[in-house]
Length: 369
Ligand SMILES: [Zn+2]
Image 1: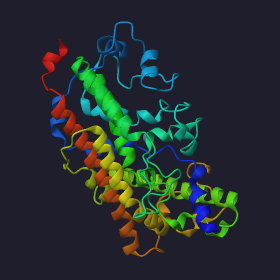
Image 2: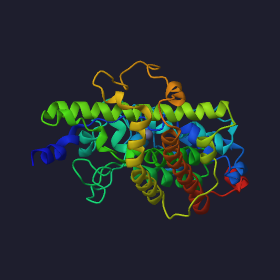
Image 3: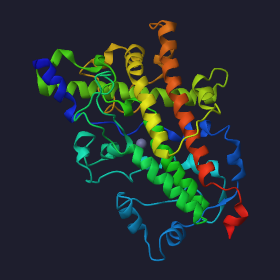
Image 4: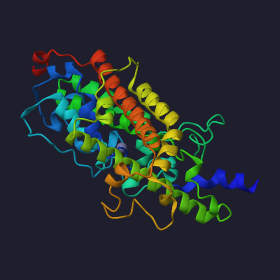
């Protein structure tokens, strides 16, 4: 009974990493490569944000009003990656801005009671409540749906829909640059949800520090640390592997699977985000188990703290080249991750197809007017 009680309150305080996948731009680059209809949007004028605000809202609507209306960090500055008033293609806008929701817009706000369970209200982890979605705890999948309180938590689904709607507003206001920029923001949340460490809090019971089971504070501290260790290693590895594959195009399991052209027709950004979260949650137990095998037991040790170690402390190359792991086990890890990336690419393309169907018109001449 006592153990059960501990388990129920264990994850009350778990903080979270706020950097899923590490580099959304890589995912967007490869996942949109075969979305050839995007090529039609090759000359889009980079218009000032105020132009969009004036046309979509009212003449006097300011950036401050916008941040306020969409509950974004009031100090966030909407900047430009491409020269203002120059032209740029739609794919480049998407690639440059899918990472943008990680640049501070969702941080340092105190607006949801869920934040105290999902990374707090201050600093980089304070954006977690916006970038996660945990489905309601289910007896059928007790580990991968485990979190406290056990109800549905996290705003990522809603944020995907909000920015999708804003993209439509921008397109209809003849502001295509802002339409693609907001679509990139919407894609960010959908891609975040494709990362199993962000659709499940625990993944596998192997991440619990069973030695501390009768010391509650220690149990929380150590289990938090263990999950964070594997979480950060996993994200580092995926980025490392994608960059390696780009350099050596002969063996590219991750890039090839991202580059597929498959998608599904859906009815809303919210539903696509929900599918993305559910699919990765279903994969999360096997990813958790595969991470444990691939990176090894040593990251259970209390002396190892991956998130707070200087960058480069745990290089990824040795994991990739280790002889200690059987090739079958390594293959399983790669296969599980590839499956997760495949779905992330799939839902990325599905959102773009929905936007194409619902509002993206290729009649650019009309847009210029
Ligand atoms: Zn994010």
